[in-house]
Every structure is written in C-alpha cells, then in structure tokens.
Length: 300
Image (cartoon, rainbow, N blue to C red; front, side):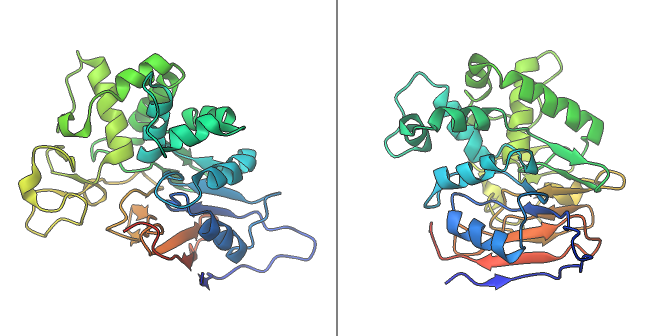
C-alpha cells in the first residue's frame, strides 16, 4: 500500500488558489507512486508547477504513462534530461533495431510514440529560476563550473540535440571509455560529450576534477554507485561544488545516497523504484516542506 507523509501546507485566502512549485525526484516509470504523490501535495494542474530531476523513464512498471502525464502538463512541468532519457533518445536515433522490450521499441509501437519521442529529445539539460533561488540538473556538475558556464554548456547540448546525427556522435562513447578529465579546448566534440556525461551521470569526483565513472578504469576505489568512504580521494560532487550565489542546486540520479539535504544542494532521488520513496519538496515555501510516498520494490 502507498502511504503518504505530507508536509505542511500554508493556508490561502478563500477563493485565491495557491501557486505552488514542487521539485520531484527520479520517478523511473512508477506512475502509481507519482499519482499518489500529486494527490498528497494537492497538486492543482491549473496553476501549480512541477520540476522533475530527470529519469522519468525506465525500470518501473509504466514509463509511457509517466511520460503522458508529465508531457500533458505542458508548461506547468519541466524535466531535465536524465541518463535514462538519454539512453532512450540515443536508441531512437539509432539505425539499429530496438532491443525487445526496450522503451524505444515501446515508443515506436505506440500511437503517440512519435510525439513522446520528440518531447524527450527536446528536454533541457539544466533548468534555473533565480527568483525562486533554485537550479536543477539530473546528476551533477564539476566543482569549478559556475552558473554562467553551466548555462552555456547546457544550451550548446540542447542545440546539438536538434540533430539526430549529433546525438549519435555525442552518445557513441561507452561509459567504460569516458575520459576521467575534460578533453582540451581543441577537442570540441570530446568536451561536449564530457559535458553530457557529467550532467547526466556524475556522482564522484576528486579535488582536481577527475571523475569516477562507474564503468571506468578507476574501480579499485570502492563502490562507485555508493557514497565514498571518508578516506577515499573521490568525494560526492556536491561536497566539492561551492554552489551558486543565492541558489541551491537540485539533482537526482543517486538512489544509493538517498534524500540528501545539503547547504548548497538537494538530492531528491530517494530510490522509489527500488522500494524506497518518491519525494517532493516545495520550492516556493521558505521552510521547504517535504512530502513522500512509500513504494513497493519494482526493481532489485
């Protein structure tokens, strides 16, 4: 059974609808949990807004249903590109036959699959609202990337993703072959691919900016999906990032770390698809109330 632990709601004058802004962690195709969470926060699709940290798709029981719900909210919902959306977009742009049971195969067969695929391809890589004091990326950022640089990098990626050939080029490098450091300025395609990997996949990085990729070569440092040991040279990226002045960075992606409330960052992937919780945080309320729903185990 889904259980709801709602946060406090501010009272509004009669007849005046509350305009609330919520950020929600990785959904991973868990439509029932998302619907339950929206009921818990009394979501009003006519005026409230939702931010999603990416990875709407994959692993859970009803990815197409989640996509239809979120896409149907129009401008009242914004989702950043997650690594699972990225994988689906890359597969849809591939000339190879889709893997049986994959999201790309499901979308190709669905009546609205073309519209859903086009929507996925247009997802931004970074979202920011300075008036709220929040920005959002799926996985994370390098510690030395300031907000202006991040916006420029994200905009360049979004522009490239208008072209299927560029998508094939940017997603051609397997994670095991990703460089641990950013390529030089003379390798623009390599730098773009590195930016794409950081924004959608990063977890751990050292103080010199060397990234630990889970499928990479620096595997002797422990579990790259988990939180590093205190004596590890690699740290969670958000421990080393100084944040943006007057803003906090929202992210998802790191289910093993769970809900993580930091001074400059907030991690919202609380492992919904793994039997954890789906989390929402209200961004327009200074107290940042949290609301969560429990989830059964969908994926071991």
